[in-house]
Image (cartoon, rainbow, N blue to C red):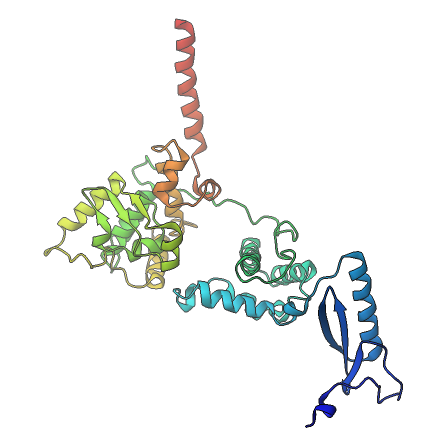
Length: 378
């Protein structure tokens, strides 16, 4: 094709008339609009010359008012391309079943929205579709927050020229009821047949011998399930009374936060010493501490024995709540408690701390008696 025939024409074949300045005919239903703004040429193609002319007039007005924003770089990206890139760059160390809510976002129609068109209305529709499908408010919030984090990451790290984050919580309201705390604790801890005793008795009947060790450990140390299952004996320093989680974290986490160590709680330390004594042969440093199989297999067994014990609505993650609330009585400084449990901030810790209200009332009563005695002495 010659250079002369490859250039856009400035005459409309449909009418035979000369096209307005800045508009060129390329092919049927392809009218190219060109506008020079601040020394930069902005180009966009439309289905008709009338729409192209209207676009040029709008850009001219925006330029005069200082409101012009070149969206052509955003036309090249969709929400899907951002989410997929974030998954590939930041979640490469996760298995397919551990990439969270990314697949759900990619399945939704918002994934096909171009960034130049993305606005808060699109995000609100995404939120409403999730709620209408019956998803829990907390799940909707997690997906909205993930989308907001991905967009913010693209703005700050990939130089995506968005002026604001349309998925931000300051712009799109989150569903009500998502922040409801879960307050399940092991009740009647002082009773002979407390929920703790019933749970331990049933877990002792498990076909996997390490199930009961894992349950006891979780109540003593407040580790997450994934952290506990990845621990090996070389990660434990019984003499130094510390746990190293450096190996269990991915490389990016180690670069950002450094090797993570936590203090080993007395009850958890006694538990490990007891477990070591139960071996016929000393385990290798690389051996796993808790050999319970996969997380899914353990979850199935745990649910079965919890039901057998007659315990209602007690998830394995509730044991982390239980441990955190127990340890809070030892560590009165919440920052110290965060170092034990691994919570990143006090807001996250607050969701796990579920004190027994009667204990707080009794403690206040005891402290009041001490103060009254002190006042009388003065």
